[in-house]
Length: 280
Length: 286
Image (tube, rainbow over all chains, first blue to last red; front, side, top):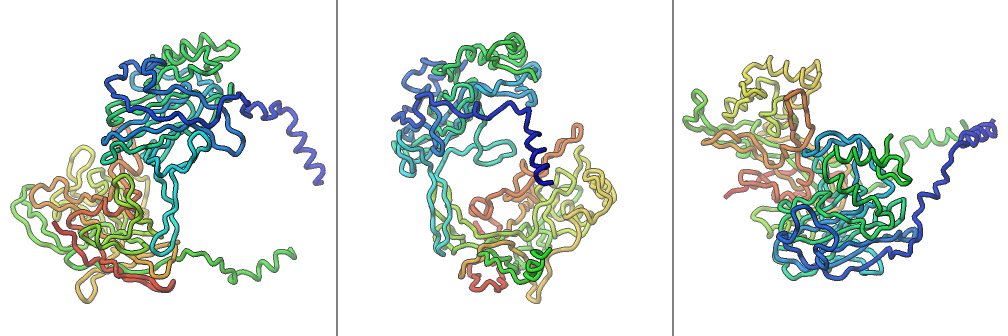
């Protein structure tokens, strides 16, 4: 009886044409752990109104790429900046754009999304930041975090997270991260810590399925995030170094326009070999 | 079947030896904490004030178990804190916590974040408290004053799709009883609290805002987030029901205001069987 059941289960698997190996990241030779040195804090006056494109703030913001880390190893990039004595806003945008048909269109869009995003080209990198003194990683060698153990006066251990890059989600859910292709940002108050070194960690959560290289753009801006209002189109061209960037420029232009423009673009490219959008 | 027999014999004999216990105790609130100067109203206008003692003026009481008490960082006894990070007060890392009374949405948005469970007997009690004691009457979504308990009840039944008052938490038995000293007492249970011998049980009462000049904000609490809780939408009636902030016992100093009452921190537990009494005897003054 048991043998028959087992056989039935095995037979039930016939027809699965996926081994799962195609989802394994490829070894591209792109480093998985990098250190980017010290960043300047950019004045918001230097940010163009229609978004930052590659090369516009050269040496002030960073366009980079991360390869897939070995299994069991955390990948990512680190850099430092000096506190200004006031609030600064750290902005990170992984490639490229993400949307679903189910989400409400943004206020300035003229209708809903008609097609789904091809998620295989998207990266997901997460943002953390805090005082460099609390950072546990080795820049360029090993990605760490900002966690430590505090023992109270009764001898009870408590985990403390010194990460100051706190993002809130829907319904004020604390300490969240954006998903694939979605911009992340947080405000860090450097009051009374002017000149003190802060470390920012761009932690690899997922490299794109299609090329295994996570492209991103990141920068530190003076002042509160509210004044900067970062969103998906704040950084443009964040895929510039990627191998499969042939359609990203047009896709991002369409996405940063309105839903109708994106729908038209998607419709024109549904039959492409590597389509930017899917009709499901 | 044979394997099941020994397991059956183990029923009642299994001790997990978990470090967590359910702490059962009592809070004592001085009579003065339920005594406030409230406005006297005539035709909706404030014409004076009077001192009343009313247990409905007792807000939610937050009770936590802590490693110790810090008597130097604030003007009142505060739980011992962990490191200060980014200029914020340190986390007090409670071992467990509970409340005596909690925020509950009492059907009308005008009293969202203002109603604590265990304080009101019935609908009329709520109408009386907000209208006559606080001078900030219950109003519906159109701004019309609710003066009938039947109207209140019917609206609640429609709002929550219920058929019985038993289904509502904000009316029913009152939690506090008056003791021989004229103070008010209520029991509490702090479930699944990590027990450390010598740990301190500390708590505070969030007192409602009561102004005898401008009654608009009377009844509000600093520990309630008006934007949190369930979002309710029915046609053009969009409601945020409100809920307590989620870090009150971790960062109590961020919520304590003048008029609130805290315990002196002298209540400790040396045995898992202790039944602590927490007296909120310290008033926060200007």
